[in-house]
View 1 (cartoon, rainbow, N blue to C red):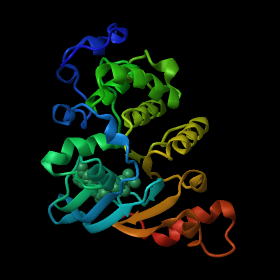
View 2 (view 1 turned 90 degrees about the vertical axis):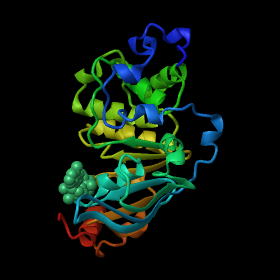
View 3 (view 1 turned 135 degrees about the vertical axis):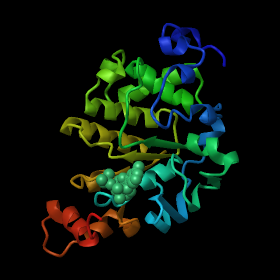
View 4 (view 1 turned 180 degrees about the vertical axis):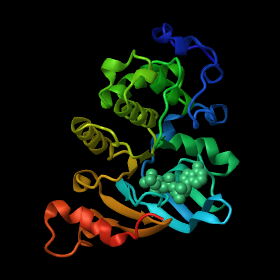
Length: 295
Ligand SMILES: Nc1ncnc2c1ncn2[C@@H]1O[C@H](COP(=O)(O)OP(=O)(O)OP(=O)(O)O)[C@@H](O)[C@H]1O
């Protein structure tokens, strides 16, 4: 591996020749050596590539399926994924991120398969993912951790370092860039996770409860960020927060017990609520009518 450009050389992370060996990372970073290969410009030309699940089945334990022959295509644009606890939303996003592999069926981004060995690194470069539980990488600063995520997704070290500044700015973490990431609060850590998932210009970004623990101002920042990026990136956002649905998303998927209970536009979703329900209660009412609840 080549050394980074000069402007970056003061950073401990950038001066290491093998950051993968030096830093024990969160689960998706542990796969770094097989993920890492240089990005080309052409990778991001065609943004509107559908993420598709075809006849997908998955179980953590034999005989207890979380997904059973699920077929689902996420539309381009911003999609909100709703569903009760245990419905399988995180599992679905982990399969979409290729952190988990289906027992049968296919997960594809366009023509790329998440499980075919020859497609895997390309697939992972095109998909950004914020897991539900994001961990600090010991000894790295906030900016180093963001840059490290970009490097693992195929950016050069110097490019990852440059882009990390923009990514942190987007989530309003610039002031904390030099702090060790393990010193961040839960909400700040979440914002770092969002920055990491955006740093390499993925085509599809999967965010698992990105606004959990964020204060109202930071939820507003998230809303603006998604609005700003959604012309060039497709988002799938799993959340339990339905208040600002119409302000952020174009489509809604309600997931219940591993199956799609509803898929459609935001107005179609609101139309599921009984007539006469106040505007501010329509999303909650529509949701309640569609799900059977926790398993
Ligand atoms: N690592 C695991 N090992 C065994 N079972 C698991 C594991 N992770 C999730 N499950 C089970 O799989 C099912 C789906 O869980 P999942 O986390 O995907 O749901 P979810 O919709 O994201 O829930 P929540 O809204 O509470 O985050 C649940 O029954 C859960 O108990």
